[in-house]
Image 1 (cartoon, one colour):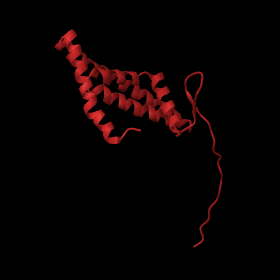
Image 2 (image 1 turned 60 degrees about the vertical axis):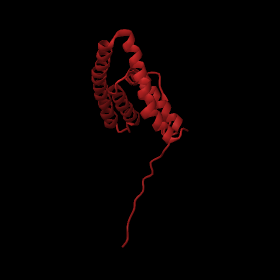
Image 3 (image 1 turned 180 degrees about the vertical axis):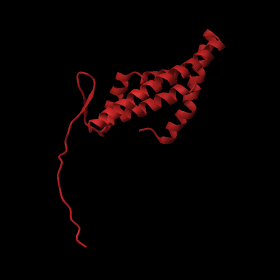
Image 4 (image 1 turned 135 degrees about the horizontal axis):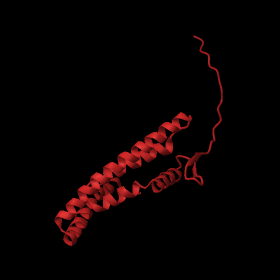
Length: 149
């Protein structure tokens, strides 16, 4: 596990330096104006895609809750979409590439399931159609309680 201080240093210093280097290299190849245009275009396109997929995920959350199930997978997909939106708002090509990868629904679902299984937070298995099913391990115990004062 990385030291939190080192992780913050990498995030706040390393990532912008790598992004700046990539933009300088790309700008040297295609020019400054096309580079700026591409950065602005990815922000606009990414924002539109995050909004569309966010609404789709919200509809799946509502449908799952209407069936009386906990929308755990959908909620974590929403977190992944927020992360994708943040990465797409940051100027740079590398963060945009990671953000666009998070916008691919099968990849995003696989990453969420993998993280949940690896962290031991849930027992989730993929089915043939790609949707998640929960493995029920608990029983409902009906009890009555009475308080005598």
